[in-house]
Image (spheres, rainbow, N blue to C red):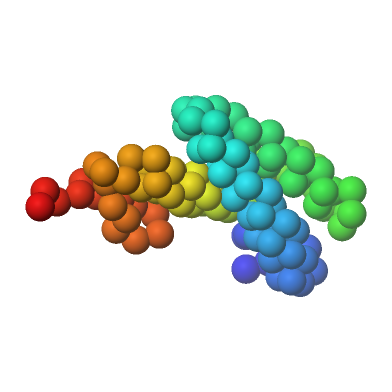
Amino acid sequence: MQGILYEEKTIWLFLLVTVVMGGWAAWMTGRAVAVTWRPLMQLALYVLMLGLVLRFIHFALFQGTLLSLRFFIVDTVVLVIFALAGWRHTRSHQMTTQYRLLYERSGPFGWKPRGSA
């Protein structure tokens, strides 16, 4: 897998920087966009910028390649997954608490119309 998904010597650096640190930042970015009721296109712009920052962290701390399209895409895909999950989780919470007469939760990432009694 080294060379395909990550360029560091061990997978632990990839997991620490991209999945843990980058994933947390992407989750919080998705949450912030959802809390302020902004559109998903704005989240996409923020995730692309976060992908550039994450690529710089790999370069500055672990001697990774700064301008590598393949690793930028891998990092950004991981960030998109976390950001969309954070956005959807927060939006689900918003819809079921602010419009509780209309919607009820149907899992951590969804809501459904409340059945009429």
